Image (cartoon, rainbow, N blue to C red; front, side, top):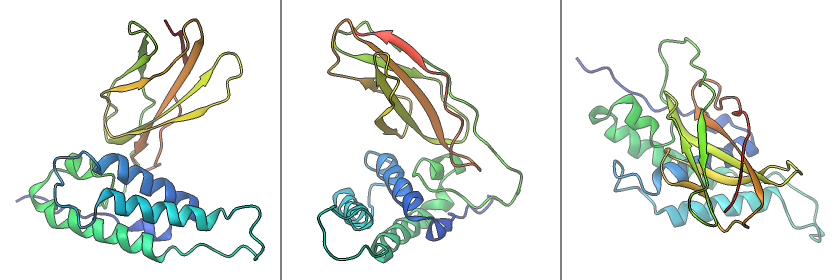
Length: 203
């Protein structure tokens, strides 16, 4: 008998920052995921809700009225709709396939499942870009990649990627050294530790 897979709904208790990060993860995991072709809303519509929630949380500095807590209702409702759709397909999916949606599953084991630190290499064989070759981390839903330029070591976001394929820094300046680091997303701790930074000169 196939074990029932339940999609976790803990996102409703997330802080505003955690909720926005989770929504970004869902976009990265669902926008090209062939397992979920009939989403109850378009990625563009969901992105618009995320953008509206983010703007409400960080109002422009010239706004005269006092800051108020952001309206989370629309974004949480949209995430619940997505969760309901994933749940409807769960009987035909494996746990790994459900994880690929960006959603967590209810863990009846109760044993913590932290993610291991990612391992990756860099390749500068293509002019103007550095490719990131990443080994898959068990139970990871996605991978967050950051980079820095030169000696400053000020980390910038490259993005969240739903798998280990086609990750690259592009539009780079030849002769400049770039640094990259990666962490896995998912598991009982939400994130793994950051990998050790790796550096390579763009060609």
